[in-house]
Image (cartoon, rainbow, N blue to C red; front, side, top):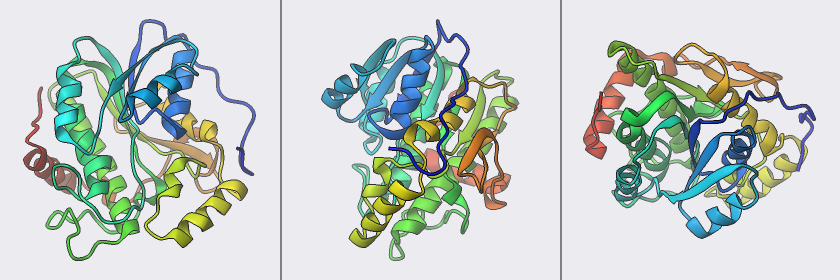
Length: 295
């Protein structure tokens, strides 16, 4: 599928031979397209997915070196098992998996589903794998991060849950996480860099699980008429993985309000740059996950 703002020319990638990339949620959409690009350029790509059978079918569609490992970000025991089973170097961890505007619910560990999957699961995974990461951590946020600040007193939005607010909060948390991760890496003199990226508006399965069925129908129309393809949407992710960028970069399409154009630096909200909130969210995330800074 392609939208109005697609482009037929994708930037060429350098030779990635010898590099290892872990991509969460690589079964479809942005994750699949990013994995395809990285494996096609010579990288070894690990598809970290909930459904291993489906993951193997996905991997069979990719040229290059791949493997599939089970990971459910909505279950911290699965996150811990994934990390415990890892025994080699990782060039870059791509925190891509996510859910969007779903009905209210809880993860296995009792977290609100969107903050639990999109932020807390990736927070735990990153810290558990960080000693083995040599280059960078790329976390996928969204232009929809722009809104009210993360509610540190009610992270699960109990009693005030709204699907859009919960998604916005989780994507803002992704950016605050990147801010504090980069600060901590610099503090200990680590060469690893933390980046965030967003795809613009790309047509993926993400838009098909809204709590409101009417919104699902409206977004299906918008996916066909306005959205770019998942391949186009994956370009900022891959750019954040391979480009020479300063730490704490936020990458997305640079044209038409972040919907099209070459990947490059994108503006972020004032809330997402708040270093004090980023630190407090990190401390709260450590408390909620029982996973602490490893370096």
